[in-house]
Image (tube, rainbow, N blue to C red; front, side, top):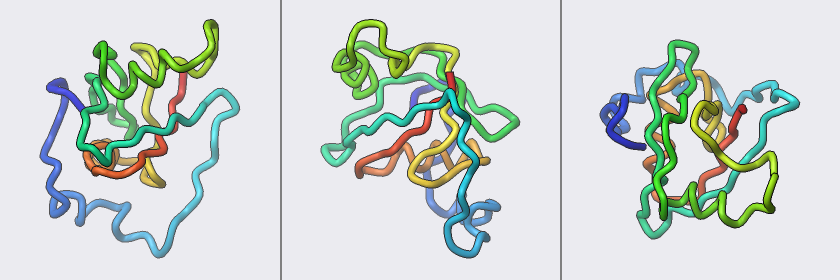
Length: 120
């Protein structure tokens, strides 16, 4: 994600988390204000954000780096769109993982298509 608040991306670290003990995939109740962005990391490009883990299991976006995947997502949105990612917003879910900042960071580092739920 970035240097701020990053931790080990090793899957072994995530294996002991509560997320890995859940049978199957549990649904999270979505907030009416959140939105989902889709980012393709299959070419191993960085997201281009600095984010800090929060005790509630989310990641607070501190900055968006020009030229990164998130910045390119933002540039593709219509002017005034509510789906532009800005500092102060929170990552609440990535590809079905939620309630764990460590799990969100690990999911963001995977080289696949990411579905990232953002809470303004």
